[in-house]
Amino acid sequence: MQQVTTNMNTINKYDEQAAQYIPMMQNKQRGAIEGLVSRITEHTHAKPQRKRLIDDFIFSSLQPEFRQKMTDISESIIATLRDTLYAESEVKMNRLREGLENLKQKKILKKISLIIK
Image 1: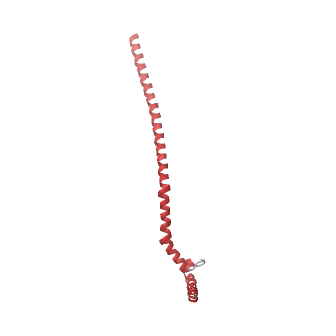
Image 2: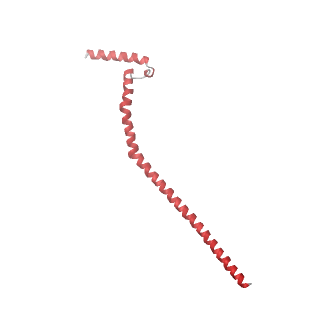
């Protein structure tokens, strides 16, 4: 046990000395070795797990919800366009009918005026 304590003290002493030479490790609560190990394990272990969790969340929750909202929005836009086009076509058809009726009346009036002469 004495040897383990001595070895740990030696490691801590070298760790503190190394931290003085590595600028990003200064003023940290952990030493240089612990900092380097945590940086390496962060990139190899934690990041892939975090990325997997984010991807799972996106594909299982956000993507279906986004797809449903986009479907709802597109259906709403299509319904609005259909209603607008229908209303515009009704207005156009009514104008054409009125124009035809006016032409018919003018034709009838013309015939009557020819008969009267």
